[in-house]
Structure formats: C-alpha cells, structure tokens
Length: 329
Image (cartoon, rainbow, N blue to C red; front, side, top):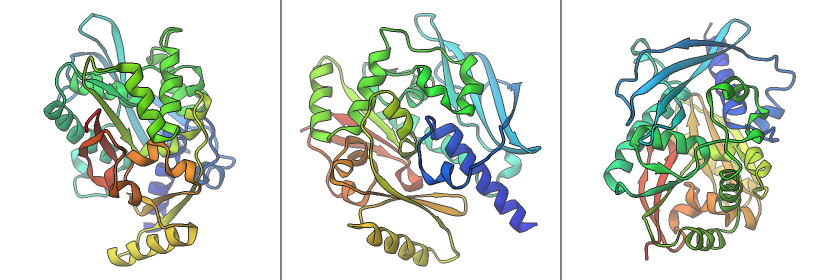
C-alpha cells in the first residue's frame, strides 16, 4: 500500500513536470524514460468559488482542471479569468493550494508552488514600485499580474506552447499573443538562453531607464527548454538526475554532491519534490554563462551575480522563485 502511494506521488510529479512544465517535447529524462507510451490524461473541468485570499483583480470565473490517469487523480490547475484596469480580458494559470485535509500529509508539487507564489507576491509588492515592469516567461507573467497587479511584459503564449496535452486542455481558456506581441516571446526566450552579459545589455537597450525593471525566474524553467527553443531560444545543455530522498538529510546532500562532482565541476542546482531530489548541472561553458543559469540558484551562480543585477527575493524550496532588480550598480 505504501509503495502504491509513493508510486502515485512520483507519477503525478513526473506527469506534472512533463505535461505542465516540459511543454514542447523536450528530451529530458522525465518524459523520455518515465513516460514512454503514456496514455492520454483525462481532464475534468469544474467551477470553483472565488479565491481566498483574492488576487489583485476580481475574477469573472475560476475553473479547476483536474488531470487523472486510469481513474486516479494526479494534479490540478486553476485558471482565473478577469478584466484588467483597462477592462481587457485576461487569464492566469494558478497553482491550487492543498485542501485543509492534507495539512498533515506530504505537500503536493502544486501545493508547494502555491505557497512559494504567495510569498513571492508579497515580496514583489513590498519591493517593486507600482510603475515597475516585470520580465518573466509568459505564465509567470500571468501570475505576477493577477496576484500583484503589477505590469508583466509577457503574459500570453502562442501556438508553439500547445504541443503538450496539459496545455492543450487549457488552451480555450487562454488568450494568444497577437502579431504585435509575438516578438516578446522570441526576445524573452533568446535573453534567457544567451550569454548573461549580452542578454542584460540587450534588455537595457530595449527598455532604457524610463521605469524600474525586475526579472523573475523559476526553477521550472529548466523543464521548459523545448518551449524556449521553439520560440527562438538557444539550446542549453544539462546533466539531470532524479535522486531518491532518504531519511538522512546529510546523507542526501552528500549523494547529490557526489553526483554533481561526477558530472563535471560540481556546479549544481537541486530541488526537492516529494520523495525525490531533482538535480541539474550545466554541461558546457555556454550553458553555465546563460542568463537563466546565472539567475537560478546553481552553486556557482549563488557566489556571484551578473553585474547590474540585485536579488530582492528568493523563495524556499531550493530557491524555486527568484526576483531581481536590473540596472543596479
């Protein structure tokens, strides 16, 4: 019985990562090893009561999408629909909180992400002025705008996003980028995956000094490489591994360090997901110097940030969410 429960949690995590986070058919081990021949997920949509606590805008609708496999619930996502200050329709994909009945159980991957986003929203509102512009990938931009009310430069996907079946289920709820907005997807994908100094120089040239610029990244972007490349980003190269978590934290850390040392320089990022550690290590110099890697909590990146970048917030969970102010000396 215990093994069955553990297997269900692991499968939910892997499907979540593959379906929600690994969007464009990337070749990471989660999909290629664990999900070969996986049958299509079942999706059930239902209306939800208003969020508590609420976002920065009242919702016109809130729908839950419950994904299941072979009759077993795996994970769910929320889609909030609302109008912005200009009365334009908007959507935001949100991670649902775990129900109170799970308060003493293992927190789900989506429940953890909801907690981190609640903390990050408070930090963003406290640190960023109202005229700040937040740069991020598109779905993070949706969450930033809905939860904080601040302006997110990128908040709509295009056709390349909908290669994964989870996004396909959500597509009718989402507005697509217009022809005028499409270049933002290409620019952001390129900036995240190019040399950090070049990316920051291009960002500074693109936006100037007319308003404060902040940049938000999450560890989940490591699983979005297929999508970033589909929009014109460069291919990043990593060693990646799922390492089972044991009962001894110090032993787990030593195990991760051994793996990282075996892969190269020992520059790694690790994030605990349920009963596993997801570990990453850049496998070439170009990847190590990419903006995304320099801003995520890799060991070497934590030692020294790129010039002109100030960290204003980093969440728990292995630094799952990080927020930076750009243009600082």
